[in-house]
Length: 359
Image (cartoon, rainbow, N blue to C red; front, side, top):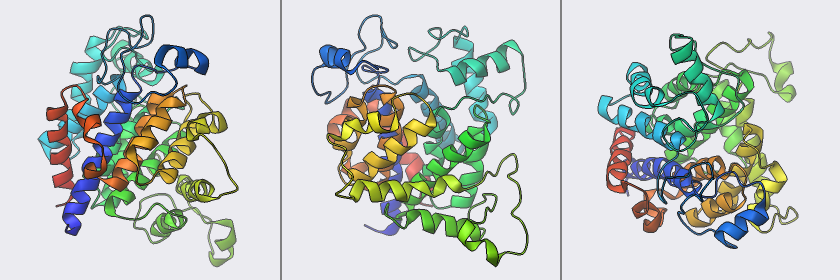
């Protein structure tokens, strides 16, 4: 394949991988009692499942998307229809198609459950009538990083533009500087994998060097070992360009995944190592680990993410994007694509945004 077709394949793989991960987590979402999850779904979850009565997404069916998936789909459709990221169009869609169908409660919106960050968005936008741009909250979760995978894919060939758009989109809901920095860094990694950079022990150094050269618009932070080379202190992070330290640890986790002396077996127990809760500090390391361990095996990566319980929907969505960006759409088993609700329309959107990414 040509370079452009490779980019198209990987961009579509990242987008479809994220949405597949979301849908895989729908049924067994938020089981912190793993014994109960095994009783309800068996010893190994190997595909899409219906939510059980009384659970978070009761009433939805196997293959459906959660609210995070639906918001991601709105962003995907917006980018395809506009040909680029149009924040006004995306926020209009959130107003008309998501927030207007909510009542502010956890179970009062599309997708079976409304996460805390989106409940706070409802309060800011609908109750307090704040303008977009003043709606972000201090949630420490990964919903923003998950949906912004669409922008990582669309701007695969323009990483600097992509980072700016990703940053702006993430801050619509998540404004904590630490959370925003990690979220933007994650999407920057996905963007790099789509461009063809290998996920290895050198990826972090490569991306950090791009920051130092001004090729990625993060606030420049000087590594301690290089500090004597600079004659002025690094700038403080601005409202849109955070410190890039979140780019540094994926390669450390890659080394751990490849180190024979670091054993996490079976791999789903990564959730016990890094934590089962929703916080980004639990989710990202687990996703990086699974994406490093199963770099060429989409199925094993996302299924181990799901079978780890806890916030397995986010873990699977983040992992799915990372591995989808490595194996491409062609490397995702067809049963995962066909099992998505409205799979034909979703696949068409993913392929269109991927085609735009390669131009």
